[in-house]
Image: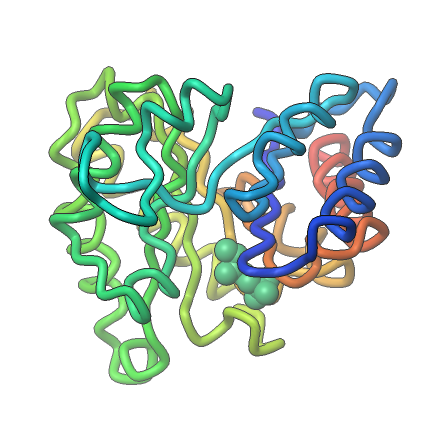
Length: 258
Ligand code: 13P
């Protein structure tokens, strides 16, 4: 079985000293342990450099939560892919539902972001997922298919090989309403089938598809033991070192049980 990935999305949380504390604790906990799971920490942009420093002494990667859709220039407040690359950032979340909703990011914007990240050798963690009403009216497969087709499937096979997908049902994010393992597995299998149709069986097998949405220390193992769930993108539970470590341990258990 392939390894798992557990990524923590801190969103807009933590002061400078709180970020320092959490990074220090994670670095200590992950140091000198041999993990089959790849751990990625995605703090706010202000703390990326601090996170890269902490990661150098430890065993995790650092990801950004967002990137500009433009290459460089007069875009006040934005951070470019080239800037992330120059700060040794290896991953970047793209298309999180909070960015789609509150910052009106479109599929066209996301496609440009994905292209710029790949050009700078940063792995996009591309988020897709349906809203509550789309789950309830049964259109969720179509919604996810169009998100992938419009912002990710323009890539060549070689480019696509450098991406990660995260399925995050919007109704499960920050709500405590986790998708059941069966609900999550159903969509993950659907996504993998779409990848297979577009890029072939080998790429589909190798693609990491993470689950996000109220994933925590209690439910992580049940989710991670599903066939098509390759790990998690964790929000709230990544803000407490103990909880995040428990989720990483659940990923390790899921790998060793397989
Ligand atoms: P929660 O784990 O807080 O539900 O957030 C999930 C998420 O949005 C990760 O990107």
